[in-house]
Length: 457
Picture (spheres, rainbow, N blue to C red):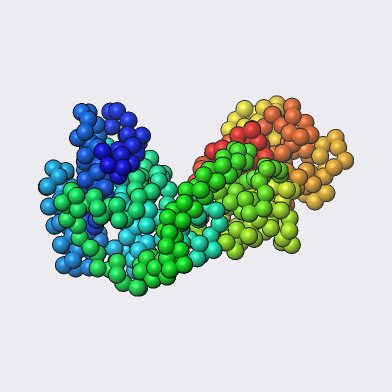
């Protein structure tokens, strides 16, 4: 068995346990995809009962006759290897124009969407692609030129999940040079097609491959291998950091699209790592970065550490971050003030839905829910309710409208966050989500301060 086959076979054996019927191989018709398809096919047939490979070709609706040629070639290769082939056609240019994104980005989004569709239709948990070590070097160099940190130096991950689909995407050839792949095709007597746009200097990745890397090779002939090694080392270092970040985020309060990091949750995270933590927090809350760049991350770090003069920061994607009482809150930037709270009643042991939450009182008498008034004190204490809320991280605009439960005599009997003053009284009123679609900023902080033990939603 060749080292190339051993690499692919080892990866597939780890990713495809017994009982998985099939997996999908992305097939463009180019040398990398044809090679990985043949290697996957050999693994499938080298032992009885293994998952079998099926190919998927996405026709992007661009490049005219050349693209049609590629689709026909994929059909010939699959016929030669005895592999089922799925072909889907997309209008990538139309999607790019409609979404105001590049052709490259639109193509990537279309392919990933089709990977998920075919995998689910065919009960296949895994997609294999043919990106190799030279591709990884280009990715790392491109990220470096954009000013990336440790995260970007990792390049492409060997295994990732496609969104939240549950479908995995694997790249077994990231440690393999392009030259070795071409040698395999020659030995296997397998033909491949070349995409003519790969020679166009319109695309940044092509310029890196055709101009930048050859120039760097004059200074360091092993630059591609060096960049591949940087990727591997950076990935290992990132895994260590990510483990610490995950421990910090386990202390956060999360109700997408909002997340709150309590004071001191990033103990052990220092310097630029704080920006990585906050980037991960954004991902946890929204599912995407929303266009964050290094400048935004630096500003987030200053906000979290108190170096920023401002206590709030606008982020791309109509998002904002707020520092309050040592807490960092990240969520949507609504741009509209919270509406004034209109008083309402809650009755004993009767659920009442208001302000996006369900109220349930165990007090023996009806209570009126009204907003906080300036200077009101914690019952039985000299401290103000507003200061207690500040310490608990409730933002100023929300504090001014904070709900209090008062009896018929006007005495304050309860408010969200009261647990620090009187845990027994705090348990007398419970709040829960009434309608997830109506969870605004006030509702979110009510839930957060009333149910501090329930962090992850």
